[in-house]
Image 1 (cartoon, helix red, strand yellow):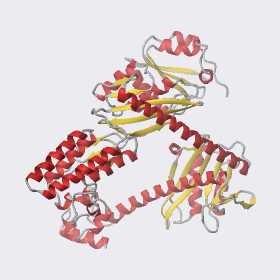
Image 2 (cartoon, helix red, strand yellow):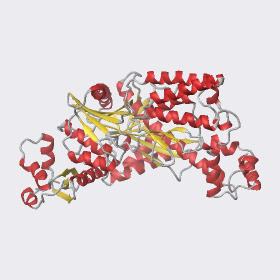
Image 3 (spheres, one colour):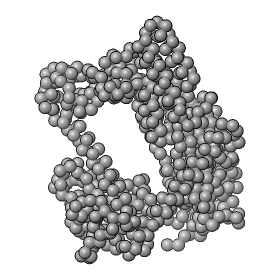
Image 4 (tube, helix red, strand yellow):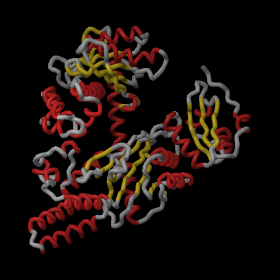
Length: 602
């Protein structure tokens, strides 16, 4: 079907000189692009009047069948609407950044003896949060360092409330054992306050407090306490040496650097909290061909910070032209947010470091892509599939037929595509029947493709032998998709990596590639990812089933009592290890019911 001819002249004549959002659609009704404007008429007209548009934008304009607009009260409101539409519609001509749903934080829980832990998700006012951190590794490394210095507990409430003796962490000097009273509540609270100060970058204040307390303990002849404080000071100095960037000021800032090289682009986000550099996170946006680096930067700032916590200072490698962005971020954050490009001194060093990390990320990405290109080309040659780009791989996971889960992972455009992964719960089959499970998974996956929905793979990998491959052939024939290439990946006689046999429909002799063959490496990469994804889903399903069923089978244990038991003991394992007397201490559980629960679980 050809694209409809869009009458731009009459449409543009009707547009107002007001702020708003425009959506460009093709003849199929698919959104090509979402944009915002301070004056809709001028901005949309530029697509049809300018002669210096990039080839990519010219192609987009040639596919426009209609344009929809929404007038807003301000440019800031338009920016917010634009961002929401880009995230929900994911237009193919907009710059797109992968949306991490949540960033990691370090948390002190609101309990009397606060727990130090790692957290992702919605914040709770009862707890104290530090971050966000750019990645999980940075947050967990900080937790590890705080354990060494202050020996704060990390165990869950159910475990903490039911300890009768110190755990292994106390024995290796990573916890002061407040659970059994080996540290007073006052001293533990002091350690928590000092740890919070350190997370806020107040190193000098923490050091001064510890040194003063140590001297006071020594004067009072409390030598054991003074020695413990001395050890904390020594550990604190070790932590300081591990911080590769340290500021004399309590600065909270994000540094955003964009680097281009050989047609590729990387954006690097560096996070500084309390004057300490917490780490970097590289981003490789989609749909940036022909886009200006400044536009990429502004797209990132909008997509990343709107509806997310914002530091008071954002340092950028390029000047941000959109004045509405700073005002909107300030309004959202509840404090003034400054976006600065021209910085000096230490901040200039932070920016240069972020740029260096962005360039390093580009080089690493280029190396990975070169390797993937080599692997994909080798697989094309081995399977005689010159147009091979998209691979989908299936695996089945269960434990003796329990909680059967199928996974489908996707490899496309030289990379694994986690956002396109799918899991399928397999039901209504004989437990342990892998053939029937594979058949059901393929039917669930490709019934939509048969109806003309979804992307069409060039190759389907089936983790299994001839039986699983036969099921795949049957399903694809049934759906009229038998022209899609199928390959069964059998583990071979010794079930060792490198000895896989590739089974193909209509080919009697299996193909066995050398262990070092790049085509085999690509197959192993995709197959192993399918296996990991299936096992993760299966374990979660099995764990949930076992947790609920064991207690649901007990008469007199309803949803509320079951929740009280699991919360009190920190999970089913804690309930199983509890004595009758300990079970009877749980709210709503009488001694008679406690004995019934104990007998059932044992």
